[in-house]
Every structure is written in structure tokens, then in C-alpha cells.
Length: 387
Image 1 (cartoon, rainbow, N blue to C red):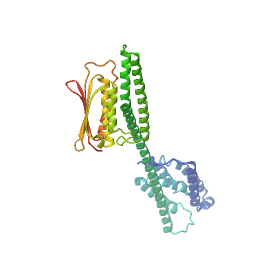
Image 2 (cartoon, rainbow, N blue to C red):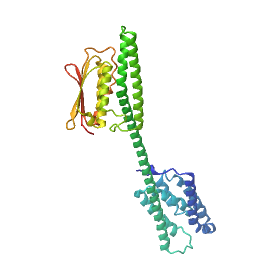
Image 3 (cartoon, rainbow, N blue to C red):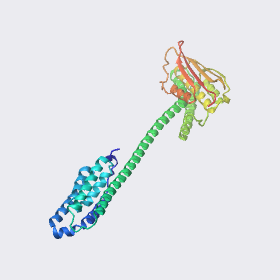
Image 4 (cartoon, rainbow, N blue to C red):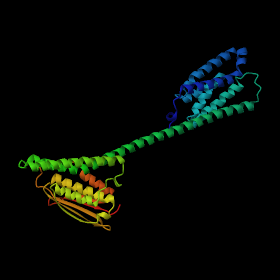
């Protein structure tokens, strides 16, 4: 991570307390010289003040040009004690970048400038031992560098946490988007499984009303009543499906209401009452299967009958279910294809067999849906007996 990436924007308060601190440092450093300069070397007083003011102007550009500003400030401290404040701020700011190739030359320059200020351009009446003066100088420079590196490491840590939080939020948003897409596909599949069966029945009876002009009043009334009842059942099942989907269970978990083996028999009987010709044979004890497996078998049979009603309404559909706990359960649905497309055939949605494939895969089974050479459509599904 580059230093520019984790340098925060300073607030007004941050600027104010930094300025106040640099003024205090400049006052302390210049306080030992200002009296001598004013009394004996007033040119030095003016030069010290002007260079110090220039240092305060230059330090505002320390982030844009950190090395150049630090170099100027360190050189200024050799002549101007009032530049000690901005020089300190520039050195700390440079150290927050934590680049030794920038810090080490500035440390050397700061020590050399300090030595010049102490031994060449210092007031004559300084009596402190040179070891104390140079020891304090080294300690001050080391403290500035250490403090700046600590601030820089803390800023980088906070920036990395912030970046991780942003990444986590983006991943969470992506996951929510994926979950939303999965849920939309699930809703579409459920709606298709429930409604396609009822709507195809309504379409078949409505088509009969449209093309049969020889029906009596009683037959028309019965057909209309069937359409009404089927539409009401479609609305009821739609309401149940929406209620289930709001609960948020997973596709692999049992959902309420659950299909039972008796419901499968009722599905066959209902389609027979609606005019379909179905040969049904069940040689499997479905009562011993898990609710999820029975539900999957029910949906597969429902989808197969819906497709047969759409594309081959006059054909005889063969439904065979065999199996046992050791071999699993096999579903075979076979219907001949019409010689020519029906004029009243519903448009294909493309979701039915996709839903069958997804349900079978979620249950750990296999499926195939093929058109045979003798113009038959065969749906074959195998499922393990238990979840």
C-alpha cells in the first residue's frame, strides 16, 4: 500500500492543533537566542524571523512534496531557530511514509544542521556541555522519526481495516445479489410447477369452447365450471407457493405443504378427469420414502403431464414408478408425439425441464428427457430412496 493511499484528510481542528504545537516548539527553540539577536545582531533576528515564516509557509506543502519540504526545513534550522516548529512537523510527516531511503538522509541532514546551529551560529554565552547538547539533539530527532513511523503504521492499519470492510461489504452485496438471483429462479420454478399444470388445463377447456360449436348448453356450462374451478385452484396454489417462499426455506429442505403418496394418486385421477388418457403403474412403497423424495417425484410427474397436455393432448401417457430402498426409485413417463403441431398448443416456456433437472440434482439423482426414434418423448428420473 502506498503512503498516499492511507494519508487521511486533515480537519480544521487537526490543522489548528498542529499549528499551535509548532508555534510552541518554535518559541522554545528561539527563546534562548531572541534576546541576543535583538541586542547584538539584529540582522540575525530579522533573518531568523523571515526564514521561520518561510518555513511555516513551506510546511503546508509537506504532503505534496515531502522530501523537498523536509530538506528545506532542516537546512533552515541551521540559521533560524524559529523554523524548529515547522521542521519538526515536516520530519514527523515524512516519517509517516515509513520509507527509510527518505528518512535516513533527512536524519543525517537534521543532525548536521543542528550541529551547525549549535557550534557555528549559536549565541556566544551557551555553557551547556557538548555531550548534553548533542545527546538532546539525537534524542529529539529519534523521537520525531519514531513518532512519525508510529502514526504512519497506525494510519496504514486503519486503512487496511477500512479496505477490508469495503471488500467485505462488496462481497456481501455480491452474495446478496447471487442469493437474490437464486431466489428469483426458485420462485420462477415454483410458479411454473404449480401454475403451468392448471393453466394448461384451462387452456385445453377454453380451446374446446372456442373450436367446438356443437356443444349443448349443459356441456358449455360444465366446461365453464371446470375452467372456474381450475382457475380457483390455480389461485389457491399460487397463494400457498408465495406463502412458502416468504418463509425462506432452502430447496433441499421439506416445504409445507408437502406432497404425499396419496397426492400423487390424486394428481393422476385429476388429470384423468380433465380428459387425459393415462396408464399409471406404481410398484414402489412411496410411503416409506422421505418427504423430499416424494415431493420431487410429485413435481416431476406433474411437469411431465403438463408437457404432455401442452404438446400431445390426445396422446396416451404412460407413467411407471418402480423401486425399493436398495435400488432407489425410478420414474418413467412416456408419451407419443403428435404427427403435427396442435393449433391450440401453448408456447413452450423452457422452465419445466430445467426445474426437473434442478430438483433431481438437488436430491442426488439423475434424469434424462429424450425424443426416441419412434416419435416418443420419454422422461426418466432416478432418485436415491432416502435423503
